[in-house]
Image (cartoon, rainbow, N blue to C red; front, side):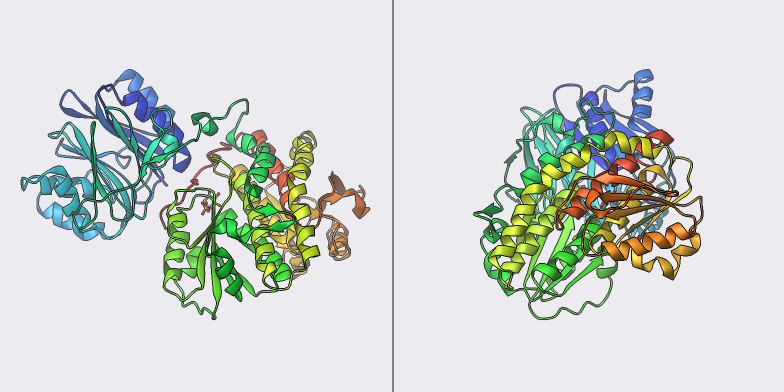
Length: 609
Ligand code: G6P
C-alpha cells in the first residue's frame, strides 16, 4: 500500500526518486507525486494516474535538487485527485509522504484548523505536515518535531518528512508499515522496500517498530520512540536489480508464472536429506516446538489464505492433527479459543500484510506453542516477529496477482505437513513418498507450462463472458478458489470457486449455455464423484472446460472441452493444476486489454486494514 522513497545526496535526486517510484508502483498506482528542495523552495509535482503521468509533468516542468521525497498512492482517505496525492506540504516549508492510516486524524485536524491551518486535501496525511510544521514553530529541530507529532498518532504509518529550513536531512518514522534505509557513499535513501533502491545501493537498515531516524548525506541516526539512540544491523543484499525487471516478458505476471520451476527448486533447497524432511531447517527450536503441536491454526489473507486451505487437507492427512484456517481480518477481531499445544501459522508473500501481522501479534499473547511464518520476504515484520520461519525462495514478485509466491507456499506447506507428520505417526515410507513427489513438482510444473499456447487459444472463449465458475474437490477446491480469484482480479470477469459437491446447493441455478465452468480434475480418488458433478453441469447445458489428467479417461463431448494435463502425483496436483488457471487468467486479461500487472483498485502489499 503506497510506495515511499526519499533521498539526500550531492547530486540531483529527481531521477533516483522516479526510478524508485517505478519500482514501487506495484504497491499502489492511482496517483503519484514528488517534492524536491529546489533552490531553497519546496518544488511539488503531483499527478493522477501512474508514475508515467508524473514523469510527463516533470518533463515539462522539471525539478532539480539534492533532497527530496516521492510517493505512489493507493487511496484510503479521500478520492483519487491531485489534491489528495502526496507529498503534502505545510507552509511552503514541511513536505510529507505517508503510507498507512492516522486513525485519529479528525480531532487533530480540528485542533490544527483552530490554529489557522487550512487543509487542501481530504487525506489523513495532511495533519502530519501541519502538526510537524506547528511543532517546528516552537523552535525544536526536525527530528524532535516529528517525534512530538508521532507521539500523538494512533494507527499505522511510515512517514518521511523534510523541512526546507534544514536542507541537509530528512526524518523518517514507522509504526507497523515497513521502511528501509538505503546506505550510499555521501548519500542516503529511504524506501518502502529494498527493490526501490537496488539501482543505487545494496546496503540496508530495516527500521523496527517505533523507530525514528534522522538521515543526512553522511550519517543515519536512529532513535526509539523514547528518544534514545538505537543500533540497527546493516544488511548487504545480494539481490540483483534486474530480478525486479521484466526482461523478455511482456508482463511481470507472465515472467513470474514461468519462473515457477526454479522458484520451487529454490524453496525445496536445504529442507530434505535422505528422503526425509528436515524440521531443523525452520530454526534451532523447530524440532521441539513442532513435536509439541497437537493443533494447528493457520491465518492468512488473499491468495496466501488459499494456500492455507490446501495446507489443512495435507496436515490433517499426513499429521492427523486438527487444523483450522481463517482469514486474518476475521481472526484478529474475534475471541479465539486456543486449545493446549496449538501451533499458530501465518502465510504471507510480503510478510507485511496489515491484517495478518495484527493476527500474529494477537497470537503472540494467546497461548500458542509457537508462531510459525511461511514467507517470501526474509526481512519482513512477520519473519522478525515469529519463533519459527520458513522462507519461500520465489524471488521478488511484482505482478499484483500472486503466482509463484502461491505455488512456493503450497510446496512449503506440504513440507511442513510432512514435518508435523514425522512426530505424529507418518511412516518412513509415506514420508519418502511425499519427498519423491516434492522433488517431482518443478519438472511437472515445467510440463504444465508447455500448455501455454493451448491455454492462450482457450482464453479466446472467455473474453466475452461476464461470469465463470471454477470447480474442484478436496485439495483442488482451494485451487478452484484461486483460479477464480486470478480471473476476477486481472480480467474483471466475475468468477467464483466452488467445491464441486456444493454445486447443487445454489450455483447450479446459474448454469446455462452462457456460463463457462472450469473444472480441475486430477486422477485421484475423488474422480468418480467429480465426474458425477460434471454430468450434472452438462445436463443443464453448461459449457465445461475440464483440466484433466489423461488417465481420467475424460474426453471431449458436445459442451465439454477436455484440456489434457501432464500427470501429477496426488500431493503436488494442487501446485501443477494452478498453472493453467494462472495462464488462463493472464491470457484473458491480455485479450481484454486490462492492466495485467497493476489491476484497478488493487495493490500488492496491503499494509493498511
Ligand atoms: C494482496 C495481494 C494478494 C495477496 C494478499 C495477501 O491482496 O494483491 O496477491 O495474496 O494481499 O498478501 P500476503 O503478502 O500476505 O501474501
